[in-house]
Image 1: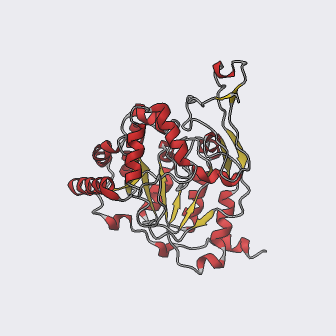
Image 2: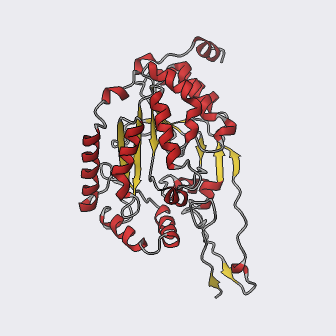
Image 3: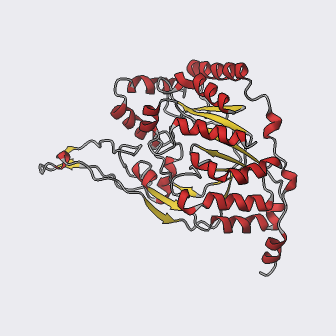
Length: 364
């Protein structure tokens, strides 16, 4: 049989390969047939966008270990290309790969603002307790294409119109474009923001999250959000043993210096196809410590690459995970982070359906 060709990293991309999704009946791999295919440099991988025809934009969950029960993701797939992204395996539901497909085949919910307005106008929505919506949890709402579509800005305008509380989670500096909306909502206790910072090392960031904002830009974004009066926290996530976890204290210190007054962290999660993709990435970029990193991850996940049980999936278990937890809590105590919890408490009682929305709905 011809020799299997091992994939090589592509410039500007996170995943190394594009293995088929777990639901596909066949497996594909490249081989050397003697015509020197392996010696040719792979062409650049262009990002393609497709329309997402989803009939709803509000996703609900009843997970007991996350602080929200509904979220909005304007996009499926994410061009940031973060190799550690726990959402990568969701592309398998589209018949695509969690690897390069996830960061180059982006599905755009073009009519998300209109669908959201219709959902919020339904009597069934108002019949249930109103809680904040988390924007950009699965994939970043402020990825590069949003500069053109402005989907996220239009969604925020709908939420502002309905006086619906929202929390934004991003690692993009593009959120600064919408400070005017978020600041106005924050004054009425209807908005907060969280910026994810995984590393302060620009070289590591370029390798690990190739198309996301640089660490410096994210710190600048924290400063801009906080200065505008928006409750702003930092997410040091995910922490990867022996790779970026030594930076935990420095990340919190740098974010606090820019104005963040709350913080959170998670341990890396490697569900389904992500485990093999991440190991492949380690072998290509950090071969000297790949085995050590995976060994520490296994020690923190009951001997596996991942455990999905509620309550432990976010932070892991075992001695290494416990050391990380103690370090995080000690740093927060020293810096005074997470003391102003009332600062992030939103007023859900302000929700209302605008007159024009309810009048338009009554025509049908």
